[in-house]
Figure 1 (cartoon, rainbow, N blue to C red):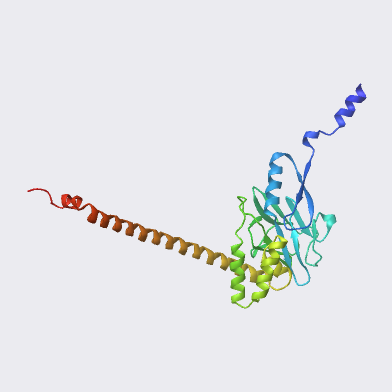
Figure 2: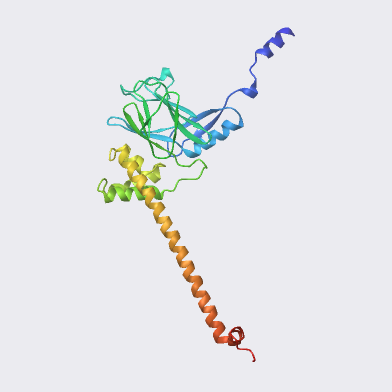
Length: 268
């Protein structure tokens, strides 16, 4: 009996054991799993999968789209140091930086690297983390990249019109040809990414070129929406005025007695 009790004491508690869920990355060919503990982590894993985060590495010799398939994902040069994705570059430390997912938002943090980590041009300290948004620029040592997600923090899909606007600006500036833009837009839809990712991966653009076009396209869309909204409001006011005029004319023609009563037409 004592041996049986000892065996039971040594047995792991199944309630606290880690669970994993299969997670196919949207738009990518890999099938991975995320370690989760309890309902909260399961929800985080589902949100992570819906957002389909990735970093497009766009260096002279290294061009690839890297899926972020873990709640904490480490970039570095040495897998023995814990790196999940290896960047073979002399400016990269063994465990250089990590992207982590918390409260439905993504953050980038340096891990005490020698050549630092940057997010949107800001150098990160080892104790600080900076939130990443769609189309944030990152620099890992000397390696440039672009952070991309498909959904915002509410789970809403990002509007693909923003990418079309960015492409139109790039074509107008002569940075890409009209054929390259259309081809990238079509291929991106099939690959489950956006056209800027393919243009970066194919070496057509630099990260800064795409981000500038994207931000300007975003601003252009906002201005266009405001103008459309104002136009609709003005059109509605004009329509209301015409309705009032038509109603008044109808009263004058078909119910003249109403106006005679209102303007002193009564008996003296």
